[in-house]
Amino acid sequence: MIQEFIYIAKKRLEIYEFLSFSFLNTPSQELINLIRNNSEYLKELTIDKIDFLEGKSLDYFTQEYYDRFFVPTSKLFVPPYEAAIRNKKVKNGRVYYGKLDSQETFHVKACYEIVDFRVEELNGFQPLIENHYPDHIAFELAFLTSLVNFEILALEKGQVEKANKWKKLEKDFLEEHLTKWIRDYAILTKEKEEGLYSYLMGAAASWIDLDLEYLMEENQ
Image (cartoon, rainbow, N blue to C red; front, side, top):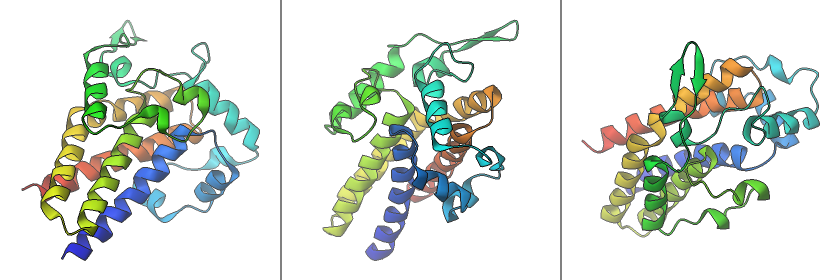
């Protein structure tokens, strides 16, 4: 039975690693090829077409990465922070994003500190790692990656009770944070323009829903 739990946790870890790495780093040709070849788990997570890949270079997608996440004046930019999305207001058809460094930001930071998760130790695009807002989408996905990894380490030592505590932390963080904003962020991103990162964000939102469903069933 414990081997089955390890197998499932490792499959979950693969998906979290892929998603967090995709947002922590500028795009690579490997990422583009993986999407073009329609990897097994991407097929399960999104039905979005990949027409955006046609005739585009890696430089094009690198610019999209900058525009989506780093250039507030870009037509593609949607602030990739939980506080900004959860506290957004829509007035006369226009979206006004919430203030950064809000209560959501502070709670995310507290969650990280409980398990000694350090953003500055992540491997990723340096200007992103130096960002001091902990509720960035890439960091929250990386945090889940870390929690699932701790769950696996506990299972491999036969520490089922400890593994279940890690699972509870995963479930709580999904319920209290990622599920509260990732779908809205994915929709807003796609409304700006369909592309590599709207595709990946749609897949991430679907995965978060599925993983929470799994964890809730396990918790019964």
